[in-house]
Image 1 (cartoon, one colour):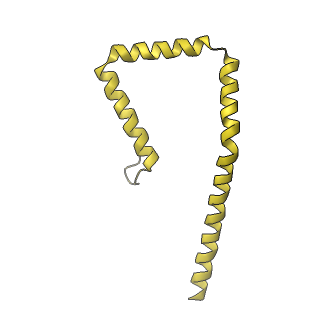
Image 2 (cartoon, helix red, strand yellow; image 1 turned 90 degrees about the horizontal axis):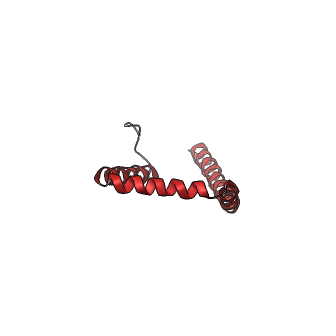
Length: 91
């Protein structure tokens, strides 16, 4: 995080989650290692095609709404800029 700028809410949430995770790992190192090994084993046993298919399926479903949201946001930004320019010209 840059100290001169205020962090975004998502960035704060991520940092808090990472801090809680780090605290847990320091408190319970054995459990953390077992969970990490178990997760790695399960991911290693799954065929890579299953992981790729699941990732592609999720991305395919999430991409159109995300692009629509970004387009609406950009249109709103352009409208606000035009409105601000017209307001400043009227003065």
